[in-house]
Length: 487
Ligand SMILES: *[C@@H]1O[C@H](CO)[C@@H](O)[C@H](O)[C@H]1NC(C)=O
Image 1 (cartoon, rainbow, N blue to C red):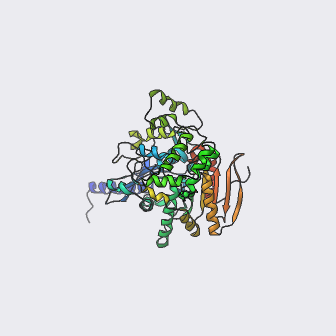
Image 2 (spheres, rainbow, N blue to C red):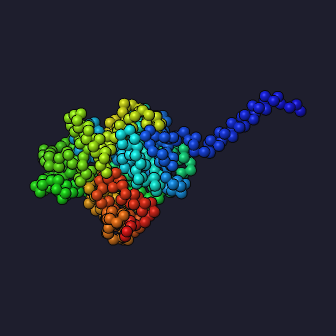
Image 3 (spheres, helix red, strand yellow):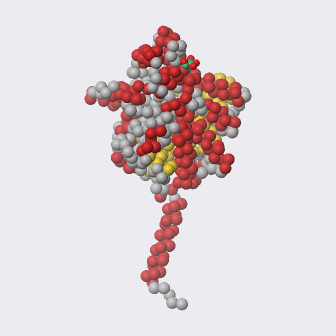
């Protein structure tokens, strides 16, 4: 047999070397197409970050954007946590005047960059969040539904009527396909956490997973956590009056009419049906006048970001922009939202994140294109929470106790009632829990399956205003343990 020409040998050798390189590259995470090598302005870190798109509908070209921060230490041994934000629901008039609809706020902008992610933007830089939840878990932030943040639908008719069912389905498809990109996380202990309107998203997604698992077990769901969640519209919304009154934001007289003549659930329900009655209109203007727009309804003790409050009334003057700078020096940057908007609109940041804007000219915290079916708000999800518990999924409901939008009192009542309905006995009686040497909040647990906790001094976005306490809560939740009883 004749030997092949030497050129051919060289070529064959080159090809096999190439194949070898390719196969090692596939095995190594460094070649992952969604890997973020470096975010502009970020400090050096040891963990890996990824971000990009998962197509959830090829025909309509709908894709959801995610940001994934692996655990700081030993990611292989840590669970996977999917985080979902909901929306802003305080001042409906401002929401509509700004063209903001809710739900539809970004889990990347709010969750990752203001609450429990590894970094917070500050000017041109990113600063480390010492209490990032990726100390305990691999954190996956999803911008959902399409139309929120960098997530998009090329077929824009999709935005016209999005509802809870569509969102839950897309979220499920997202995760299934995300596992194809990250097969090492398939079968990993999985938790879903979120806040506000995610009181709808999280239980609805978890319910689909439980159903899906009956056919093919791919979601190793170990628990869900819901922060200041909308679980039952009337109970949640009508606890607002008493909260505002007891914190001195409204007078005795206003409290009286706000809890008799027209309560908040009736106001919202009339408002969204376009049939606002004169009485509800009168009551709400009285409430709005007394509470004042210079108080953050998401945390009645926190200062507001003056520049954004004023820009909402289109009265922004150049001197006022200075306030943003001044507040950066405070322990908590109440203008973090403005910082995030600036940061995520930088072209270098978008390219580092593999993000692109589709159909919108700017990244916004809350969607300006999405028209969500508002009336879904009235669909109770507390019953879904009940069925998840019956299916063996542990649930934590927690409340930042300074939030007047979804106050702790409504959530506590709903959890209590659910425990009663399910016949779950109290396993941890109502007591304080500790972080450091101080009270982190109060907690009660039922049947080792359902628990409630407050976070003392925390806002609607609890990990933003009380990061240390929130991290202790998160750690206990993942470990399935009651909150620390002593210090
Ligand atoms: C709120 O108002 C609605 C409609 O008037 C009423 O059915 C409901 O009982 C009220 N809820 C509370 C807690 O007052």
